[in-house]
Amino acid sequence: MNRTLAYSIFKRRLLVLVHTKDAPDDTEWAEYTASAGQGKKEIQGILVYSAGGGPNTMQRAQLDEAMGIESHPAKVAVVTVSRIARGIVTAIGWFSGGIKSFGTHQLPQAIEFLGTPASDVALVTSEVARLKKSLGIVDVL
Image (cartoon, rainbow, N blue to C red; front, top):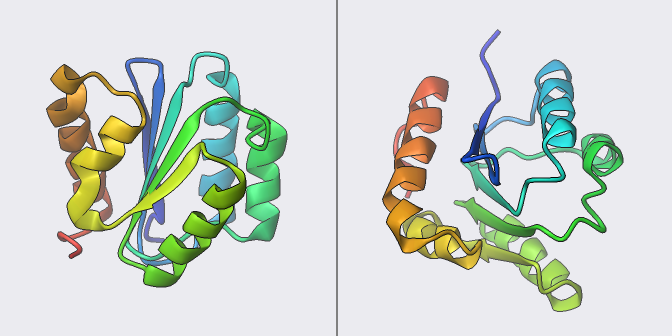
């Protein structure tokens, strides 16, 4: 089975999640939500990079249960190739200023939006590249 997502927690405060073009596998998603839930008190930002895939309604509910994402103070930046997904995130952002969408060419701006120090932007960009490579994602433009 091919993996559908990869994640890491950068400096215990930035959750970095990369999705392939496929919907997340339930087992992988459960592992991810458990890890996010364990680190939720320290996480100040969530960076999602998607080659097109994303969680379904049930999986989003699991994340909310594990992390309290609806009320969590962390900002969320969604970087994706999907214009539809960016539109949805933009609409959500009208009601919650803590979420914003970005095109894949705007990764540095997404990282900065999350309040990441300028000195760490290149390191986070490298971490996204490492996670993409682990999933076999070739640069998505």
